[in-house]
Image (cartoon, rainbow, N blue to C red; front, top):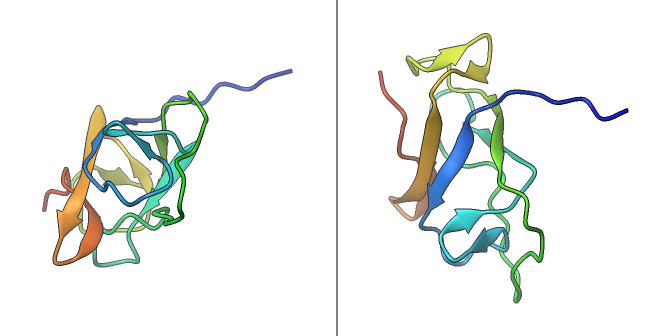
Length: 96
């Protein structure tokens, strides 16, 4: 039995060096955002080749309590975008 969980999709990712990035889309099963204060993508993973999965990533957890989209550590945004900010993969949908 497969359980479906409704979660916001990662609609865009511009972190080209991440193994889960395939032509601007994230193919991890789910990503984790933040460390409590900074909305970085905690799932970014660098390697020499890209993931072969066709899955679209969802936001599995958000640990940034100061974001208006965060309710009980779950992102309530319709979708998110991930990009580079200050040299790190960050959630660009983060809003205070």
